[in-house]
Image (cartoon, rainbow, N blue to C red; front, side, top):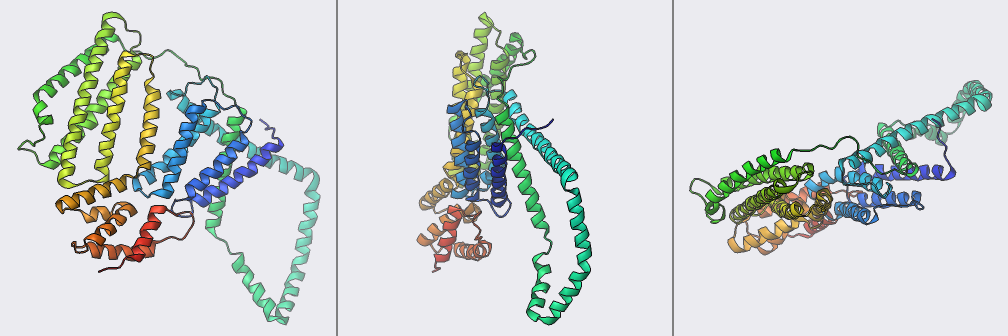
Length: 484
């Protein structure tokens, strides 16, 4: 296979080289901060240059994904939440691959399927293959031109170098002996030319990024994909089998809710449980029961489309009971976790669990509607709702919410866990300083802030890549903080 590249392709390769350099500078030099949004700006500028005359498809949904990518990248500059810092290293590139595959696919392509996810990944791997073929062709071209036209010239140059080596040594020795400044200059040359392994690594990362970007986007630009067609016989579940499973599950849940209704919603603890055990049981009920119920409900809706008549109506009723039972479990878990927070305070994990329960309630509400309105698409809503939920959790700054709730609780009860707030990224440090300014006599608080001041001064980074608004604000406040 021989690739035919036009002038625009060579220019695009140079632009991808620029993107590769920016990627290496942004992600491999220091802690990621403002560098992520800088890279996204450069990358998408190149993308829209390459596809400036391309007929994009799925534009409304594409804009939603694009806005999500930009918001997640900006959060690297605004906040420094550890969990989202780690997750977004994977999620943002995945969304970029999905977005580019989406807007360059056919208008008739159905993106809400596993087949499209496979298609998007296949574009990436084909892009890597494209870059490999491109590199092979370029190397072959250089060899052919060198062998045919310039081999004798390179041979003469090599002969000239070999002949000049003895004369160079003699002349250099004479000149070094004649001038001490020239001697120092020559002696300094080895230091300037010293071999550094990190430069080789950086160069390899730049080339890898360059050809990955180049190959992926060239494949997308050259392959205006046809609609992804469904292949093979669709998987189905027998209606009677599905209905039997649903009825048995419903019987268990109805009995369970009826027997323990007072336990769920009384707002009091059973004598045999501590607060920790009570909340822990609620969490596992949520984790296992609701997620299993959601999986069963989704599978029945998706794989039993040929059921009609009485069986279909009965199945809808059974699915409705299952969804409503799951709602009861969610409300119960939500209430007991609220009790736990009132007793022991707020943490990042507890607030995240609360938000996830609300998200699941929305998912179950839509699923309940889908049971009776077949035209709705579950995967469309699940994907969009999940994307909005995840981006929302990044944008709202859960750390700040946790700090504020704990400060409110401290004002009401006088109880606060300063060591937990200290572990809660830079936002927690800012909260501790606010508390110290109002209540400087809290045990261990001053020592904790002094320790942070010393450590932050030592760990403070001046590189542009790691600049972060919240972290910089914490550094500045710590430097200005005067202990009483």
